[in-house]
Image (cartoon, rainbow, N blue to C red; front, side, top):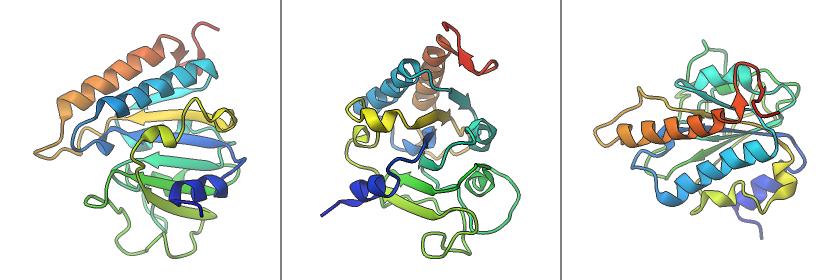
Length: 205
């Protein structure tokens, strides 16, 4: 029997994927293993000549999502998806993103004790969504390498891009702001060594 992750991978099999990552996912601080996964993603972007973009606010990544994307995996402390028309914010961009086909929006949340649902009126996981064919959610796997890694060559070839945002305003007393900001800046510096976001191309091409 498939587990939750395997079921979602099967659901989206063969569809172009965009990885959207919010640093507020790591409310309790980022582990060395998760940091390794993030740096692996930067290496993957370089290897496959993928766009990899960085923004402070999550919704500012939205215009950079390639139109041929059909599946968005949103690794985030908040789901960022609503079930009806509302102004564009960092908590509603999942509704507003324009794609050629809206197949699946999948929210990966950090743990069951903190689930940031952005739509307080419509349960987007139990009702038919006006844009997306499927809206799903799952608790993070123990290892984020299970989501996307070098071992899944076929899935990597389906990646349309990667977006990473900082979301500095989502701070709590325990939010590791300094650590996450430093990690964000290090990832961005590494990515910008080979990818120019202004030109939308690799700098060493």
